[in-house]
Length: 431
Image 1 (cartoon, rainbow, N blue to C red):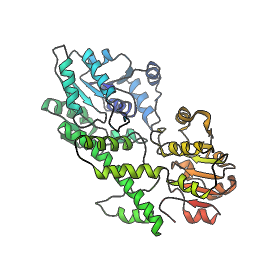
Image 2: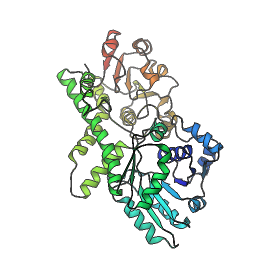
Image 3: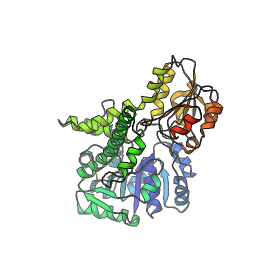
Image 4: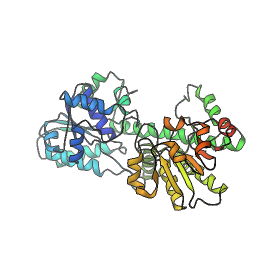
């Protein structure tokens, strides 16, 4: 099928490349000409394992292309996927301006019956509203319908998550739309959940918010473990054998970040409030996460006289390993906290440096290795569990640091090994 994808961020570019990999003729549309030219050369604008390989392969074989000419792209397409951002507004609601902008472009462009598929995460009822908007504005005698097809990829494993998803969720209101979606995803050989559009939209929010709930719940349990002398990792292991609970998302730490969980929890909480209902569990997950992010730096502030002019090492900048995404990363608010108190921050991350420079410029010092960040540091905060960081030995901290104080927000090391090496070691939910 001829498919256009509006937007070349994490969702759009990965979706387009993977659809091409499965044999469809795909053209990805973006407004940035330099970005388009770079993608044509096989260079991905995002750090994502395996993405450049399938971009280069499918571009070379003629199944994948990129353009800023949306009119030509949409005019020729059987299906148009909308995969643009829906950033969070100040009140927690989702900003749908980019969705509406693409809808307006579609109105200008299409000349034949077209299925429009919203891949972006949108509030419940958005698919219906966009369909009504397009139908009302369309001047040409063509039929359009809007389908919901939420994504469930995780940054760092997005290609694998798309090609080998646990399920494909599709929300449609007609057999015509259902048949097209089945045809698109037939080569993937993945179970499909076909429902109405509102249910599909809710499945996305309910799934992400449930995972966020698990994370915040375990962080809450970890905080109590510290008080009562329990070990949260043993607690999580004991819980994981229960099939009703499972083993994933039970790791305690300094909170979740990224482009999905923070935004989606706030958006669903806002939507429920707008409809006169309070999602107390989701509200609690948000509150726990916000408090958790600064848990360690605040604990450190209680023990030391001042951060002023102190060399502080930050290991890890991205919100998780395997991505260069800093959105809602706990490292960001911690660095802001430290800079406000006069600290000299030295930071290491294997791929996050360039994006961090956009935020902090030269206000912090970037190092090429973790050991370089640790050199002569009085205190270290671990924010991301990259392998390069996890592979450090207790002796490395002892050798490089001037004082041996480590606050580990990702439980990368064994407490007894760090303490035996003479390091003052603090982690999450462990004594």
